[in-house]
Amino acid sequence: MEIKFGSIDEILELLPALPDKLRGIQETLIANLIMLSEIPSPTFEEEARVKLLLQRMLESELDNISTDEAGNGVGIIPGKDPSRNILLVAHADSVYSEKVDHAISVLAEEIVGPGIADNSLGMAVLATLPNILEMLGIQLNANLVLLSSTKGLGSGNLDGLRFFMDNNKIPFEAGICIEGEKLGRLSYTAEGMFRGHITCSIPEELDWQRVGQNSAIIALNEVINRILEIPIPKRPRTSIVLGAIRGGKSYNVMATHSSLRFEVRSEDAEMVQTIRERIEDIIAHASSPYNAEFKFDIVSSREPGGIDVSHPLVKSCRMVMEKLGVQPTIRPSMSEVSELIARGLPAVTLGITEASNLHDLNETIRIKPIYTGLAQLLAVLLAIDGGFCNEPE
Image (cartoon, rainbow, N blue to C red; front, top):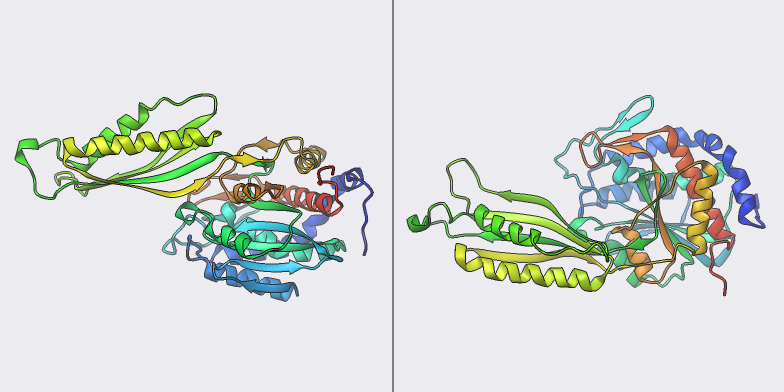
């Protein structure tokens, strides 16, 4: 069935009834969600989960179903105009190792399990979208390129998406990144960022002249104290997050190794670089007093950027959310959208439902809001497809 909209207002008129219509896809969506969630998919080991997604794409008879050297999975829902393309991305990796029990519990109103929100639900939406469009009788004008990207989290540093964008010359009009949480999320900017890993080692032979000081924990603690003394401006907005610290073996064993994982963010790229240089200086000066060997690695980084709040894509997203009664939560992103907008592609990140206990083993999503999230995604896709998200020439 051909559906042609003369304005975004015509799309908005469909929205109040759309969530209830989308409940018809519940069985397929939850089946896809369970199957994908119960396959471990830590960063760099996403192959099995991507393989299942490709099987679902094959059953839906998508075009150009394939993987690439980075392990990304891709399939295309063909549109009526082969010259036009919209990119829809969900990252395939999660923060949980394969040793974690990935069993999922489906309750009356919630679904619980590790990674269910970040980002099994995003992948399940990719797997189910062909069924949704078929159920609603919608064929887009543009090709819809469904991409499950690998190596997105942590030291993966978005390498999967970068590989795909470097090696595919498809002229995309816009991109949408799907995250399971949270409904109302609207990201269209990225902050400058780097994630650092500092390791500290000291000789295993105890120097009795320095008992109480020759500890990798004490040496690293000195570095942390010096990092906390770095002046952090309010403008440009800047932050240092000390995320994880490890060290030592037992009560009475000298700690010979310790490590710190942290993240620096700023709206200004020069500020990110300045803080990085300060930390390098701190480490250089901390080595001698503690006879310690420090190693400082940058595991991932981003450049600041984004599209303007007045961009038609952003305005369309806000209009769709308002019509659905969803309060937009606008925040910069470090995820896939940062890479797309860094390449000049208008893109946003949208969340699908409400969630809690993020990154805990009992990560939880609410079922009912999913249909509002799907309606939101569908309306934004139709708005892009209708040309209502393009900037005036």
